[in-house]
Every structure is written in C-alpha cells, then in structure tokens.
Image 1 (cartoon, one colour):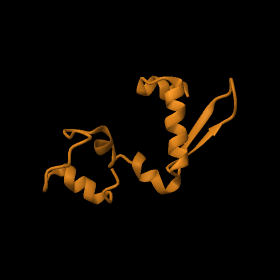
Image 2 (cartoon, rainbow, N blue to C red):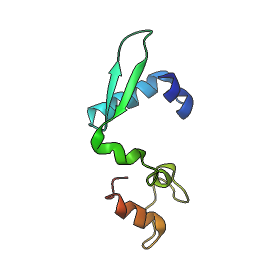
Image 3 (cartoon, rainbow, N blue to C red):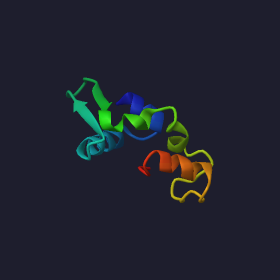
Length: 87
C-alpha cells in the first residue's frame, strides 16, 4: 500500500479504495491480509498487456491529454487501435 501511496501521491485510504475497485471490475486481484500486514495487487493475466513496454506511452499520456480523443491518423490513434481501444 505504501508503494502505491508514494507513487501516486494519494492517501493510503484512497489507494486502497482504487485497488479494491480494480479487483471488483476484474482488472486485478487485491489481497488485503489485515492491519499491519502488506497488501498486494496482482494484474490479472488478461490485462497483462497494460504493463507492456508498447503500452507505456499511452499509459503515461505522451502528448495526449487523458480526456481528449487522439487525432485521426496520429500515432496515439494508431496505438489506441493496436491495443483494442481499451484506454
């Protein structure tokens, strides 16, 4: 939990909520072992492509705002098409 909190700059409670939501929608498996014990988040196999090097530019939002559609014919549009439009 501390790693997610540090990497994202959000509170531990909020990080835990997001991780639980990712589990609920089937993107990952969230294991919370209890107070004082580390929690773990595992990306489910069918979502492994999200952790690929090819997907990193989309994930990091290079030259593209998260709430904007990519311009037709742009590299971002092609990348989105290559990954099935799952962003």
